[in-house]
Amino acid sequence: MIEFKGFAKQYLYGKRLFGAFDFTIQDGEIIAVVGDSGSGKTSFVKAMSGVEEREGEVIKDGKSFVPKCDDTVFLFDDGALFKFRTVRYNISYPLRIRKHAKSEIERKVLEVADKLGIEGILDKKVCKISPKEKRLVSVARLLIRDAKYIVIDDFSSWTGNESERKALWDQFRKLIKEFKRKQKTVIYTTRYPDEIMGIADRLVILHDGEIKQVGMFRDILATPTSIWAAQAVDPFYRFMKVKMEEKEGKLIITSEDLLCGELEAESLRDKLISEEYIGKDVYIGLSGKPEKIQTLDGCTIYDVKNENSIIR
Image (cartoon, rainbow, N blue to C red; front, side):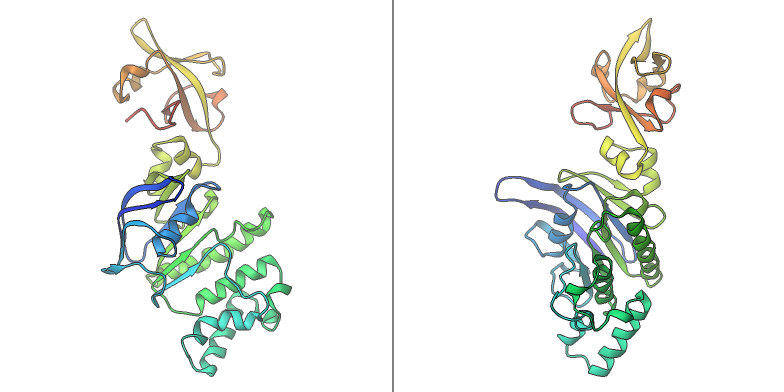
């Protein structure tokens, strides 16, 4: 089990991330830290792991989470490979420094290389292989040790080739499911909605260093607390600015972009966190195309300034 108590990260220039986050990860859970580029995903896993300084506590099985521990393996976005060494050397490195027998090292190297389909490049230097092969070498090095906790940062974000990214993710998805069966705990970061559906038990949604929402995929999809949380789980999520007004005793939402010009919103009155929003511009968001909205069923209304939900 991993416990976050008042978790935050303070930069020297003043910015503070994560806002004293309290969170518990149970053994065997798959946690996806989700956000766009620059949202703080890498800072989150590095501070969590103790690779970078943090505030508060991160407790793993009753002890402080530190980077040098044999029950945890890390795969950060740079891969941390020795580019002028062979693939074989890179994969075997975690066992070499732990003084494992040479015969055991060779057996395990061949085993993980075969599993990932990279046995043909074992004697090539890392600087001579493709970006995709480098990522697979990083994964092989991760697999060669039996660890209880696995931390992975932006596994497939290195490539601009979408079809290759999806192919690589499909391969990695199978490994995560295998980790799950073995009751290993996985924390991974991603910016892609297809890398969280059907695989992550819970999500931590990040934007600009702030934790926007935590929960299961289906719960966040049904009741997003901010535009950023909604867009993190739904690539088709749309929103537009409208005015919330009161006409003849009924709550109405009006906009030239609406198909019918205005929609009755009286059903939302009791859900508003404050009536001060009546008469003001707000955002309306839901899946699909906003211009085709004909009912407010399933929609969320947001504050224009902070983009957080204003309905309960």
